[in-house]
Length: 102
Image 1: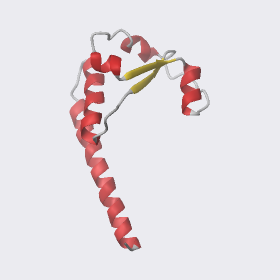
Image 2: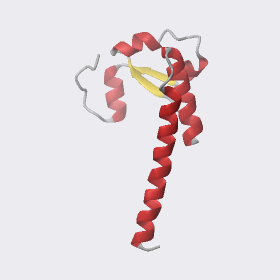
Image 3: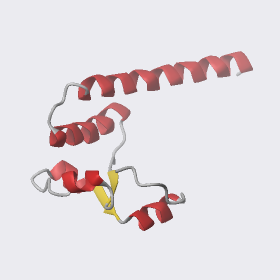
Image 4: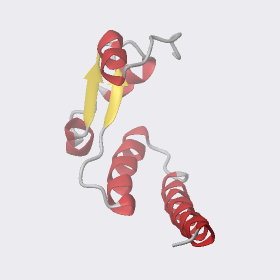
């Protein structure tokens, strides 16, 4: 494979990824309920990108934690969410603690 073929292959792969993100975006933009948004997002990412495991990590010290932690009636959210203290999140991700986002 020469450089031109390699570049063309990479462009085609990037186009496929962009199409998948567009499909994901189109599917979640019309959702009005907070719980439905997260359930749909987690499920659609797994389906569209064909990955077996998708989860979201929520820092306990952030405002969004209070909205999500009580969604115990959602098996999708409960089984695909990790609620972590800020220090643990940054230790696991290898990043420095940042200013609170809210």
